[in-house]
Length: 50
Image 1 (cartoon, rainbow, N blue to C red):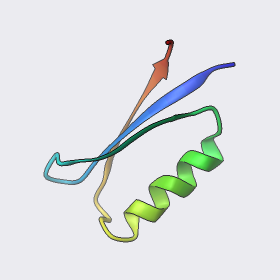
Image 2 (cartoon, rainbow, N blue to C red):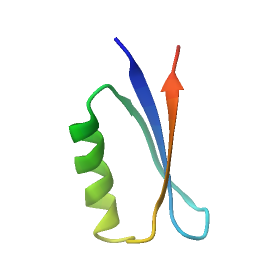
Image 3 (cartoon, one colour):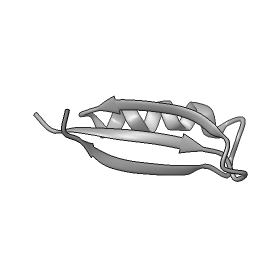
């Protein structure tokens, strides 16, 4: 099973969240909740090979 690690930062580069999931729908929902309060997010995705 392939997992993706998501790192979420605001427009100033402030760390907001980091999580790992294998479901893009779960990631979209979680990021969407943050985006309500901080609309200009940077989301970095990377393979989580641990």
